[in-house]
Amino acid sequence: MSKSKWRDWHEQRDKDGGERPHQLLSQGFERRDWQEWRDKKGSKSFGYLYTVLSVVFCLTLAVVLLFSVAHLPPFGNPYNPAHNEVSRKYLEEGVADTGAISINAAMYFDYRAFDTFGETTVLFIALQAVMILLLTKDRTIPHRDNPYDEKGGARRDDILQVCAYLLIPAIMIFGFYHILNGHLGAGGGFAGGSIVGAGLILYASAFGTERIRRFINNRIYSRIVFVCLTFYAVAKGLVFFTGANGLALELPLGTAGELFSAGLILPIDICVGAIVATSMYVIYILFSEGELG
Image 1 (cartoon, helix red, strand yellow):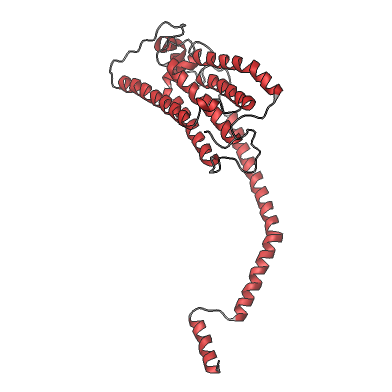
Image 2: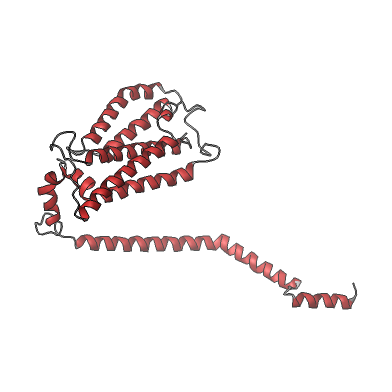
């Protein structure tokens, strides 16, 4: 290449924004120096900064919480804001309004039923997020030993299976008792559903998931949740809509203290118990096996 052509080539590179070799060399040194600083001192500096900011945040949060607790009303004072006409309404007229002996059930499934509906919906949405994260194409969780064989049967453990034979019937009966007894005393759909879900998890751990898949799989679970949430929303929505518009919709409350009483509280308790029990089981299966079937 002649000198004129070489000079023309350099001028064209300068016009096009090109860089000369010495500029590229200097930038290479700067990039290498930055990488060395980042690898040696940058990580330590970030660690120190992270520690300081974490301590400052924790101390600030502690001060705010302590300040809030210090200004709470004294415990047991009859003039506290919590002791108002709302609590008196629940305690004095709860049985007459709802037919439920348990004031807790009357509040959760009648007076503030939509709040409980929101909590149940949040549980369902959280489970859907878990399913999106854990369901994989190969139907297994990577880098984790699967406790089940290819057919969904658990690896044999005689001690676990004997204990499961003894405990599962009692767990199930106790869970169903809590669900059906929620409007009469301690219990309810959340507590009873948790107990039934624990029984299902114990059964799957001891005997595998092959048999349970016959009545709890992805399709059946979706139908259970859809039916329960729809019934909950429609039933209480109709009650609140008619009550807010002065329309007469009197549901039979039955005799307080009997099993079939308290209007819609018993069927709503059953719906909530079904959602909680199946959701607990599904979360366990997704974490342990990676598929629901």
